[in-house]
Length: 339
Image (cartoon, rainbow, N blue to C red):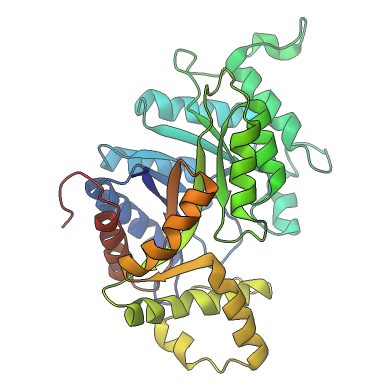
C-alpha cells in the first residue's frame, strides 16, 4: 500500500468557531499520528469564514510538538504572500526543532481574494503579476547560496544555517504546476478535491517529465482527494451533505462556515443546484471504506500516485476522526490503535 496522509484546513462550522477549529486540528493530528498516517499538512487561506488556518508554520510547530511519528508540513505556504527569506528562516527553524519531520509545500495562489492579497503584500513590495517563479528561485538560493557575484544577498544568511530546508513540494490543480515540479525536480501534490483539470493527466505528466535534481532524485506525486467514510453508505452520504452545500455556496463566492447536516438536508435545492452538486460529486468519495476503495483505487493506479492525501470536511469533529479511523483500517495503516 502507498503512504496515506492528511490535508487539514481547520474547517470552521456553524457550530465550531475558528479558535475551536484550530484546537480540533491539533486533536485530529494526535489521532491520525497514532493511526499510522504518514503526513499532516496545514493549508494557508485568508479572509475565509470557512477556514481558520491562516498561518501554517505556526500550526506546524504546535502539531509537531504533540505528535511523535507523522511528518508535518504546509499544504501549502502561499509564496506570493511572503518574502522568500522569511519562509526559509521559519522552515529552517522548524526543521531544527523537529529534524526529519517537516515538509515545505508551496502554492502559487494567494489563497484569498484580491483585496486581502493586496493587504498581505502591500508593505512588502510593489511588484505586480505572477512572480511565483522569481520567488521560488530566490527561496532555493537561500539554501544553495548560488547568488551571483556581488549580489547584496551574498552577505545575508538564512538562520539557523546549520540545518537544511525541509523537502520542497509544489502544489497545483493544473498542468502548469505538474510541469514545473517535474522540470525543477521537486515533489508534486495535485489537488483533485477542487481541480477541474484531470488528475491522471497531471500526475502521469509529472512522472514522465521528471528531471532528477539536488532536491529529489526520483519523482514523488501526491494525489489529494476529499473523502468521507462511515459505517454505512447512507451515513456517509448524510455527512457529505454539509460539504455539498458548502461547495455549492463556494462556487457562488459565498465562503460561509460549514453548515450542519440538518441545515444541508433541509436546503431547498433547485434543479439547477442539484445538477451542480451532482457534477461536484466527482471530486468527493463518500461511503463505507469498501465503497470508497472500489472507486478510489483505480484512480490511484491510473495516476501512478506515490501517495494519497485525504481531506475530510464534515460538521461533526468526532465523525471526522471516525472517518480517518475507518480509512486507516481499509488501507492497512500501522501503529497502535487510536482512542
